[in-house]
Image (cartoon, rainbow, N blue to C red; front, side):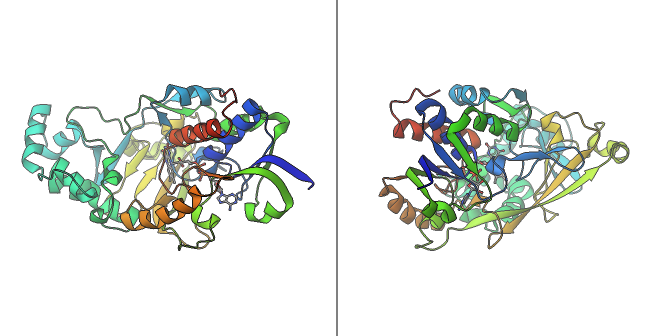
Length: 388
Ligand SMILES: Cc1cc2nc3c(=O)[nH]c(=O)nc-3n(C[C@H](O)[C@H](O)[C@H](O)COP(=O)(O)OP(=O)(O)OC[C@H]3O[C@@H](n4cnc5c(N)ncnc54)[C@H](O)[C@@H]3O)c2cc1C
């Protein structure tokens, strides 16, 4: 066998590269990472576009964590640019403060108010449901029908092409609802982006492995399997693909991104709307729950802090998943979970293969959770390694 490795790792995203880095640097193992795309980083890949703007190529990736261990781990490969991820919602021809907070309430009633008044208003609107079983029940039990229809229903229908009634409560439950003026989108303690971008961070992870890691891009692992020797597989690709779709295809939601770039001169004209020199819109992310076909417009320059005269916005259109499309979001619904359980049972019987990451476990995880999962798996596989 011309090529022989201790580990064959499928996928060069957060899961695959974290596992590779740890196995190489802490356990002295030789790893082969096989990635079908032409770059490392998985969905967190970023690059400078033709206008010099640093963009997130597969949708905006807002790093956040409550785990000091994961933050310390990644800090070996990057410095951080702290960010308050700010978003707004746009409907009825105007911007609304979002996630819902006291400022949103004041916009709705058209005058100043207090947390107490907002709490009393919500108490009247809420639909009493003890254990919300789906996303619609969850939101109407928190804010009532009016705010559900304004901010959640249309967005969720577009995003998932399923009624919120048919989606787990956790889907809409990710978004905080507050009666104070805290308008942060996310709840985690540490919210920051890698200072020089995700791709630079991933490159440093690869470099740390020195000669022990080989990364093979533009290759489906199934093409290479007969030609390499390996002790164990760490699979971060789709679990149904690994088992030849024997229980049917797992459903996913895909996305289509439409980028548009603007020169400094065009951005000056836009200033009455953006309210900020050098930007096209007033916040990093604006949700469009109702009137438009896209769900959101992201101008990531707000978050990266990049000093660049141009700016690029990305309109995000939810799309059906199918041949040639990326599998972005596992469907958080009971029918999909039932299919996944069958694959999971088979995966549990595979002693020479680990299934980690979002595609192999068919679950939407944030990046920090995937890093944690990879660190834990390496700890299990190599209990004597000195994990960093
Ligand atoms: C639109 C969007 C926005 C997101 N925003 C956030 C956010 O703001 N914050 C956050 O924390 N998380 C966010 N996430 C989640 C984040 O993308 C994941 O947590 C993370 O990318 C998971 O890493 P992974 O390695 O498991 O998967 P991936 O990054 O998908 O990596 C898996 C890799 O496996 C490769 N692969 C698949 N099949 C094969 C094959 N047969 N052969 C070879 N290679 C293969 C794929 O090409 C891919 O590169 C977002 C996800 C999406 C889709």
